[in-house]
Amino acid sequence: MLYHNREDAGRQLAARLVHYAGRDDVIVLALPRGGVPVGFEVAEALGAPLDVFLVRKLGVPGHEELAMGAIATGGVRVLNEQVMRSLRPSAEELAEVESKELEELNRREREYRRDRAPLDVTGKTVILVDDGLATGSTMRAAVAALRRIKPSRIVVAAPVGAADTCAEFASEADEVVCAHEPEPFYGVGMWYEDFAQTTDDEVRELLGRSEAARAQ
Image 1 (spheres, rainbow, N blue to C red):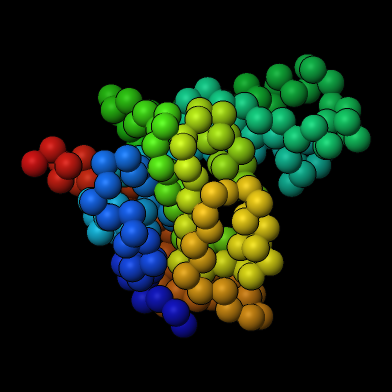
Image 2: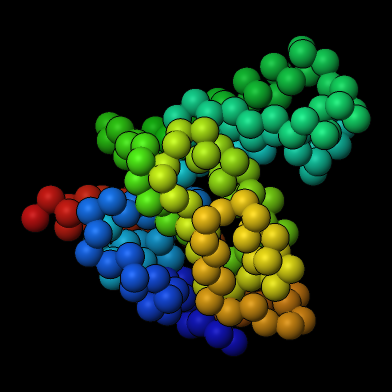
């Protein structure tokens, strides 16, 4: 066991990111829901603002586990050209899947942010945080989507990850910080004593606390 809970993991991860502390160009974006308690601790330690970055996979009809693309916070859409070429989903199928996932993304945006606008990441150093990297598919979609809104630097950060997955991000992000890369990996939850699901209420509370602290 590496971590007691996500808060403990966030504090330990923050220790690996101290070179970003106190900078006014740094933003922490957490992947809901499990990445938010981790990201909250990182943002607190670095004195950086915290926001969520929502990503929804666009699954191929009939093969939903296979992503033909993703949509993300800020109206960003990224398509996997290799999958699109090989499976050739129709424009109607793509539109139907995107409409469904956009509805859920917008619901979560309203649920988590209420009346808060997304933070502007253009030209910023963005630290993308999740509670762990197994296959890295959600984080990979987040990085691709985030590139479209032009931050100056993307840092992928997780308390624990599979070694091969963490290595793959070296070609996709500007910096990768996987605090621990245990072998064999098994799964993210194996490395937490408490890996209870983060609730929507907890996400809202942590975002509110972070905003209130920044306003003081």
